[in-house]
Length: 459
Image (cartoon, rainbow, N blue to C red):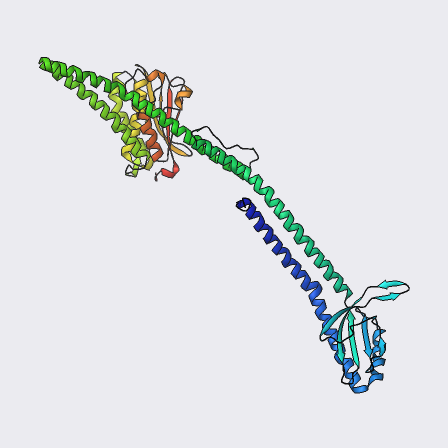
């Protein structure tokens, strides 16, 4: 019963049945061509001869019939002629068939007509038509169909053996295939159950053959990798959220306690100062939650995308002008090189926000007297914004985590910020089906935001 529940076994059994049906069809066509048609032709020949010799007997008499029968059996023909004429008294008058049915049978009959010549037996089978005349005489007319009989027996044996072997091999093959496929499916089930049980490191075993199950396993493993990374990212975000919020909340709690004490003492100036500090902490928390909410809305697709054609070069120039005063304060050389005619399709507010975040990061981590170089240009496959600074840079391991919420590289921990700026840029880039890459500028960091042709407008 369990075997019949296997889809692979049922498919194999279905294929065997279809194959057997095809064999039956082929055998049926072969039977019609090599047996049915020749047999029908022999019947027609025997029927015509029976009519002829019956007329001779009725019209010309017994002597004329016997003369024609003797002449008939000596004529060489593709099919040997057989006959038997039994008189009204039951005595055999003329015959070249060794035996025949005692009583006449209606219609065509196939009887054994083996002959013995020089001590050897010759196998024959006669297709005969048996007639009884009003006088009581009996005439049997036939032709040899031994070749048809042999083909018929051979075809019957072939059909029996072929179908039997096909069904046997099909059932055995179905069982083996069911087991083989079952083992591969069980590997997927095992990995799935491991993940369900909490082991996110469970993976589908891949044999390396490159077959369908290997490709399925590789796809599932990629999916499981993505799930594991997502769960790990959520865990890190949760830890980071708790860490980032614990400090301002603790400060606020301390300020509230101090505020209550100052209020009890009637120190108005101290109360006002504490309220201001509490307000600042509250605004800081509000900024964190607003940033998280905006990232979540963009990543989930709930942010309304206001798409229009954007001159990317002009947008980069505007962002550069906005941050030029900050660059001047740190004596940083801010160079903007926009290529003209860079028109893309997207949300101008979001893309401007993303470019500003990238510029803000570059200026924040570039030391005084450093340089930030911004390009907006077209490559063979994309339109891109490229921002390069000569700051301390980011190591390769940390570059892979730059877009995670609250992640901050070691050399950035002393700087202001919450670690959400690049997360927002990554969400904006994904929303526009563009890519964000980070590489070593030796020294410094190089950031490329690439907009593929699919989201570009006409230049």
